[in-house]
Image (cartoon, rainbow, N blue to C red; front, side, top):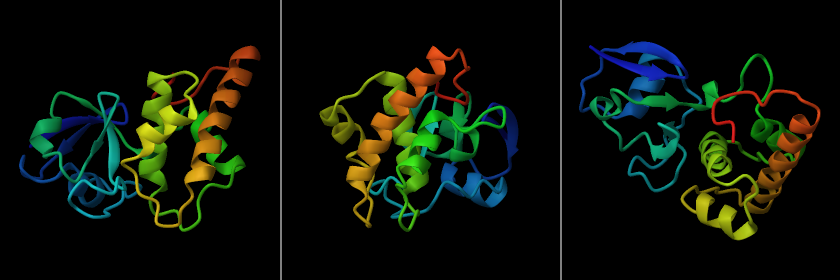
Length: 167
């Protein structure tokens, strides 16, 4: 039995330490927002944050995640309010099929934690490992810029920024 901190809470995992984190999240814990895409760490659909860094959960063994904090798409919103990145995703109507969006949002969250106001080049670099078969890349870029504006609006109005990954 392995105990992992997932979305701020300790969770017991009975999967073998060599099992991919993705399967423990989805099959054992029912956190199905993290998607299986390619299984070789190339598409980004399974991206989660491991101590704030985006990783491909299909490539991270459960045992390697022990002692870290894992954040999945289910842990992004906080206190019943959408995180600015989630709100921006909705406002900019980013999803088409939606399959890659969890990984896209997690990668965008990590970017905004690193850079408060990323440039288009910053966004392109940070998001380059996430494949969107629908080609929503321009909408994703707009949404990341919109999230910066939403965060600034909340700060200006003294609203707390909600969720994991506040930047």
